[in-house]
Amino acid sequence: MSIMRNMKNENEAVPKKAIKRLQIIQAAFKLFTENGFYATGVDLIMRQAGVSKRTMYIYFPTKNDLIVAVLEFYRINYERGLKDLLARNDLSNREKILAIFDDAANWFGDAQFHGCLAVNAMGEFAGKDPAIEQACHVFKAWELGVFDKLTDDLQVNNPKDLAYELLVLLEGIGAIAQVLKQPCPIDLRQMVNRLLDSHQALTVAVWPLPVEQTTLNKLIPGQPMPPIVFQSP
Amino acid sequence: MSIMRNMKNENEAVPKKAIKRLQIIQAAFKLFTENGFYATGVDLIMRQAGVSKRTMYIYFPTKNDLIVAVLEFYRINYERGLKDLLARNDLSNREKILAIFDDAANWFGDAQFHGCLAVNAMGEFAGKDPAIEQACHVFKAWELGVFDKLTDDLQVNNPKDLAYELLVLLEGIGAIAQVLKQPCPIDLRQMVNRLLDSHQALTVAVWPLPVEQTTLNKLIPGQPMPPIVFQSP
DNA sequence: TCAAAAGTAAACCGATTTGTTTACTTGCTG
DNA sequence: CAGCAAGTAAACAAATCGGTTTACTTTTGA
Image 1: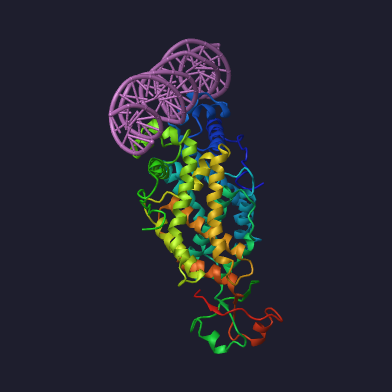
Image 2 (image 1 turned 30 degrees about the vertical axis):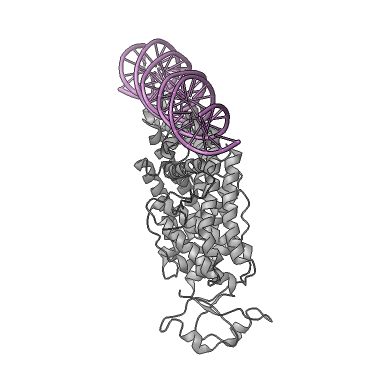
């Protein structure tokens, strides 16, 4: 069970007032994910949530308000799912990054995977509802921020760039999985490892032997060489 | 002007019968791209196409039939835009790949960029209309095929994997651009080059200096070393 | 205990949706 | 030039949309 599919039911221990609100959001989240936003009517949402339409419109005066709340829930749910992993101190940052991709690959491989909700929302509301656009932006910026925190104390020259490129991989894998609906044919861990290596170490492929020592010396004059990493071709 | 935004007007020299059809498809393509599928009504499409509703429903019995035709047009339009580039014999395959990403970066950087139409369509119709799903699948499989052709006579171990990973980059960059609406902060050519290098050459990062010649020799015992490539860190 | 708060169920509203039909006009071609 | 194919414009239909309102019931807390 991947993080994003694991919707924890902590409806207890929460102010009772907020329970109804959460019921609505969770039902709407499921329906929006599976059927899209425009295609999901409010009548169906209220029926699935077990809530009257009047109550719904007290908590969310418009459907778009509900959509914004669902996108915030989407992010908070993901954040909570990652919390334990990110807090572990027995894992290196590289291992945490790899774990994120392992989990994502598991999620994307689900036949029920319908793509990133924020991307889908942009496809339907870009240029039409600023609040929804903003919520999508916040989600994606948060994702980038997760990788930022994991790369900034890594020994790399441009941790921000590395974080962005990791997000590129994550989004790319997801988008393709959403459309092709086939198991990802590549070794994702290997791809991530290679990306990390290419940032963490000065990478040089050599041919033919013998390589002159002077060639290696002038790669980055005056700078210490980064760690040695071997990669299979 | 990127390939995907350049909608050639070859309405002349085409059977007059098909002109109306193309008018409808082009208008629908623009509206679906900018406003989404569900949110775009057929009345607006027919008005923008300068065509009566009756004519529209003769060419496309249902709105979803039109959507399928638009997705096919989306692919054919892209294919035609790439044709000249792919046919050039003064460019290496690596240069053609880089040119595709240059063009895509230009396209994604447009403030009017609304993401890949096939991905957006899946977000709205996944699990609801098999014909639309199929059209999206065909589009993405075609994109993968373009990279397949460009990598299979490259000197790499797993050209299919490389092609898939190139598509991952393309999709990832696009999805992030769609949501964040910010200029891509990374050096895309460098990222692509590094990916190609990592497949084309045995890559090894070295530290610390001096590196012993024997270290290099034992990388892959008995196998010839691949070509030398220097990459900036 | 009792009144306010919060919830339900369902009718209702006007606007909009896809899709159909009718009456009329244009344009090509034998 | 006659006639048919193909087009337009607009009214129309049935369903559904987001959202409101009304009448009634349940829950809750001082």
